[in-house]
Length: 77
Image (cartoon, rainbow, N blue to C red; front, side, top):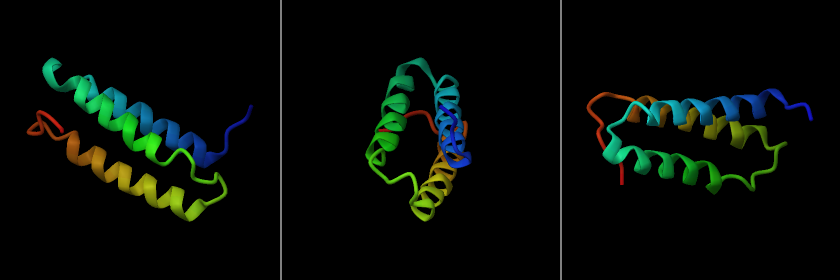
């Protein structure tokens, strides 16, 4: 199955989130993984042709990733 450009972007963002989780302290790593998975699962029902919504969520996800990737962020609830 071939993926569209947006689908590839979503998967790349998810992989990047999981990579950043591995950089967090071991005690809070699971919290970051659960948070990332929940954020993606919340929007799994969005129609793949709803480009505006997907692009908005990608921008939002990248901003969140940038924020949570900061070294000062040690845990997430």
